[in-house]
Amino acid sequence: MVDRRDERRPTGRRRLREVAAIATALLVVPVAAVLVSLSVIGLPLGLATLLALGLLFGFGYVASCHFLGRVILKQPRSPWLAFLVGWAILRVVAIVPILGGLTLAAAVVYGLGCLTVAVFRARSGSGDAPTLTSGVPEASGAAASPPATAIG
Image (tube, one colour):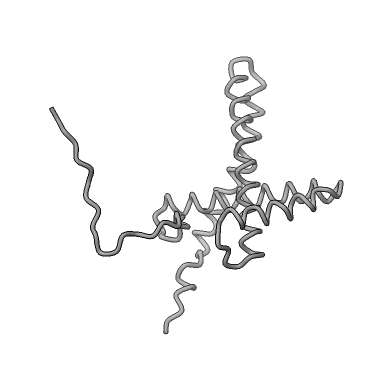
């Protein structure tokens, strides 16, 4: 049996592109938004970008919670259960004053890195993009027919 895990590992050039995409997402965009906000004309664009980054940081935190829950539970029955376990662990760690802030920052950075790599791989068509399953069993043997539409 051939182990195909090595074929999916990023090569040097591909890894460099992924690191560049992550650096752009985490470092260049916030700095550019602040610089654009310094002018009166660019203030709305800069503030909107910073608000959007706040939303993205929330997505990164959620992705980190889900990943941590998946690591702890190995094969969870539900993605919600994995998220809640990871969230509970990060919330317990957040009680400690300095460690909580550092953990929050690390979780956001790690989650955004995971999301950035997933989007980058999905857009490049490498086939390594994660797939989400809804948990709904597919119909066996029956091909889905397109919906009937009436034109005219």
